[in-house]
Every structure is written in C-alpha cells, then in structure tokens.
Image 1 (tube, rainbow, N blue to C red):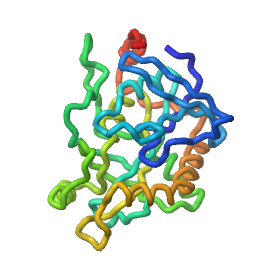
Image 2 (spheres, rainbow, N blue to C red):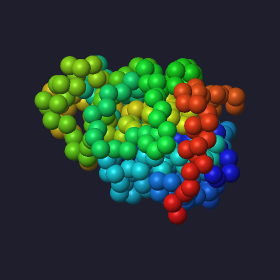
Image 3 (tube, one colour):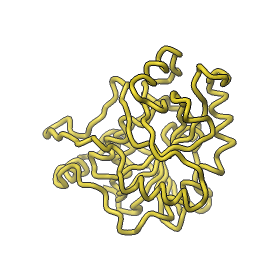
Image 4 (spheres, helix red, strand yellow):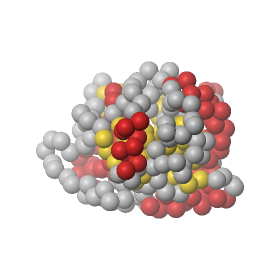
Length: 271
C-alpha cells in the first residue's frame, strides 16, 4: 500500500477536472490490483485532500469504462476515510430544477456489466446498503452548506444508468414512477465500492438539465458542459465548505469486517 497521506478525498464528476493549483499540488500514479489510478494531492478547506477526476482531465473515459475499483482502492491506500463526490445529474422530478444542488441520499442501480465488488475472490461479503451514503457525512454537509447560505435540496434519489447516451422520454417517465428524482451515469458502483472498504461517502449533485416534458431545451452534452462551467465557482465553494466542516476525528461506518478490508488492500498490484 501507498503511505497514508490524506483522510479525505474529492471525486470530481463531469466538469470538475482540477481542484488545486498545479504548483501547489502533487500528482501520483498509484498502481492497484485493478490498474493504475491518477490522484492529485493538495490542500482545500484547511485539509490535505486527495483529488481524483472520474473521466480524466480531458473527459476521455466514458461512464461505463471508468475503472471504479482502481479509483477506490487507490484512495483507500492513501488512508482516505471520507469521500466527497460531485456529480452532474439530470432532473426527472419537476421539483428539482436545473441549477440547483442536491445532497443525494439514495440510488437505484440500472447499470450492467460493471465490476461492482472487491469480494469476488476468496471471500463473500454482503454489504448493508439501506443507507448507501454516510448519514453522518450527509448531516455535516447539509449544515455546512446552510452555514454559507447555499440553497440545497437535502434529499434525493438518483437512478444510475449505463450511459453514455442520455435517457428517452419514456425512460424518464418510468424513472419518475419508481421514485427517482435525478439521473446520473457514474455513482454506481463507486458508492458501494467505497462502502466495502469502510469509506464514508457524501454526494453533492448539480442539476444541469430538467424534465424533458417541461419547457427545457433538449438535453445534450453541450448544454450540460456549458451549465457546469458556469456553476464551477459555486460547486467548488460548496466542496470547500463541506471539507472545512469535516471533523478531524470522523470515523466511517464499519460495514465490512476490518480484516476483510485489510485483505483487499494487501492484494498485489498491477504495474
């Protein structure tokens, strides 16, 4: 394992490819049993923080091709105990307007074929998932955003689709009917993989587009990236406020026996 250097990490979604100044940060290529992950270490919110961008700095990796296990294993090897992720989402619930922030607290998985567990060899572990995001981190984040006057919806169920295509109108109607509020392509299996290594997660989602049955312009990559670019100062400000509010003694839930986690982190790496 890599020497522990950060207890908190930020995973950047679409539009968030850098978090630190280049001359005040350290880039690392971390070899893992699942491939190499690129991580940047820097300071934000008064904390040493590991940053990882899901799609790569040039947005070259499609949602279904992201090496989620390598990413989470690499962060765990650095000593990360809390992950704050950002995500671009579309609204399927008309009460979640474009331009708003959401602290997601539930997901519905509609992906397929993604490697979604570390326990696929030598050990079977059944992860408790009724509350997939850490309730403690969720409460801390909500209070932090209230403290800076940021308007945020404090609950939300995201349906995670395979991508990279956007949803049809019929799919959106179906997602709404089963209780989803937003739609995204990347939060699964990222969230349960982190939980398998006893890392707490909290998600800050930015709604880039609305219900296609509304007067919204048709969703497109151009629309999404334009709105994300406009929202970057706000998103980064929210991330900084949440990290600043995170207590030094934060302890994630032990959802998997620590010996089993240690065994995963002791696996040989691919170089």
